[in-house]
Amino acid sequence: MGSTASNNNFPAQVLRNSLQKQVSVELKTGMSYNGILSSVDTWMNMTLTCVTCTMPSGEQWFELKEVVVRGNAIRMVRCMDEAVGPPPATGGHHAAGTSSSAGRGSFRGRGGPPGRGGRITPEERQKKFGNKRPRNDGGGGRGRGGRGGHD
Image (cartoon, rainbow, N blue to C red; front, side, top):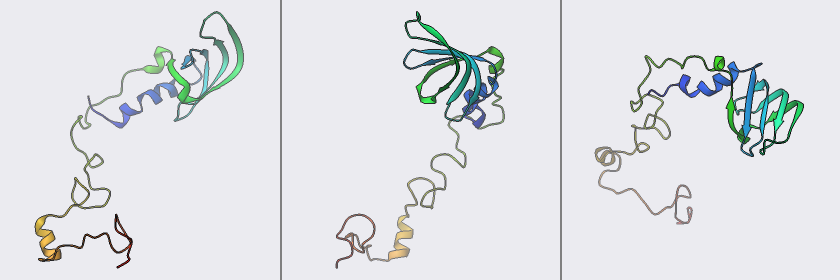
């Protein structure tokens, strides 16, 4: 299955399609809220109106005018089938495992060729330093190790 931006946004799109529709939200604590989804954000924080709150035991319930639910407290959201619709199309996108310019190992970070952060080849090292080995005592006050520029 391909990994595309539309696949990554599919759950968020379902929630946006569920706006102004009846949803059921179950929290990690076991409480559940049934109401009309009036707003949702990128962190899945949501506001429900005309809410029926049911306690984990299922025996106690009460009605509320409005509830704001924090996204990281949500275990599950149930919505109407119409909100889901067909799955997003995956044709024409990169398949999983193929590289793209934004993937790992691309030209990013410190520059240089893909891979380990722009390491130089032995030929480039010879051209740059000649027969001299680069100083590796941690001096200069920058970088790792050493006493920080006290020669």
